[in-house]
Picture 1 (cartoon, rainbow, N blue to C red):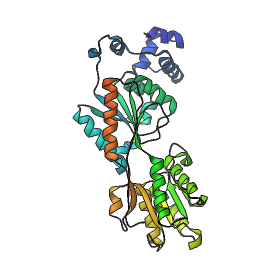
Picture 2: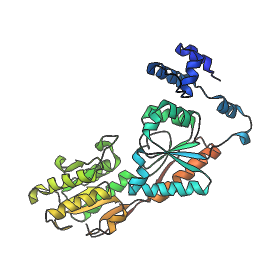
Picture 3: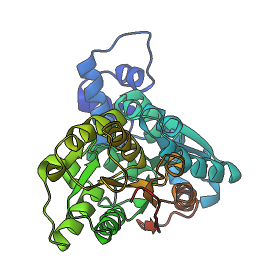
Picture 4: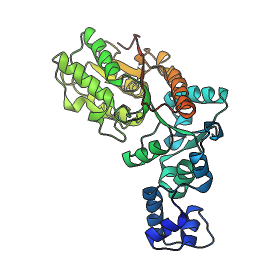
Length: 340
């Protein structure tokens, strides 16, 4: 096992300085560059505090302790402010509570703080992590090497971790296919691309594939990156729908119901009839979608169930230690309403 002395020798500082940094001792200031070197050495040398080292070398599996705490990684209290993620959060929280686990909300900013990262992840103050927000590859690699990780409803399908999601590309494909069966050929797209380029986002890929398969032209000025912002969706829709009839789409596929609702408001303000002048379809089945006028056609995604399965998957990895990255895709459903 790596000791503080080895870290001190590696960095070229005293053992006291190393201890002060790792314990976040505020009694004396340590040069920021020195702190970075110490945390880098902690990571590279694989330092583990004595208490947890004893747990790791314990020969008896029964002696291994669990904190019964799970970290939910989401930015800006996403679970409480976004109705889509609140359903996923409810599924996770209720499932963990029933099993005696508690949920700790952390952010990317917490992980960027070396002291907090060390306490939460390296010292294993949590048994596992549920990823809702995106984490950079280097940080993700370190987390999954230390504790179990499950990605929920995000673009983690290409990573070697367990994920719970729905087939975003196929859902988008079916949404566009529905518009085409209604006779639409001039179809726009409103989506987002936070963390990745929008053109690499799976719902955009599904849109593009459907348009190509049905040999329909994709008009670049009808492709809108709203950054998942309703106001941007509204303004962009108002701009493209203000064009003359021959220069605007007859239907718009929105990668989220809230984006569709905002865009529909723009259409109403311009005096366009939905769906005869412009049709809309979304993805989510947000609760508001069935109550707006006209009611929004959408792809229903089982958010609550995604949360339940994500929680169960992570608990299974914590308690049974399966060395396998499970990829779980839940079914979705087309709900046809008045907007198409």
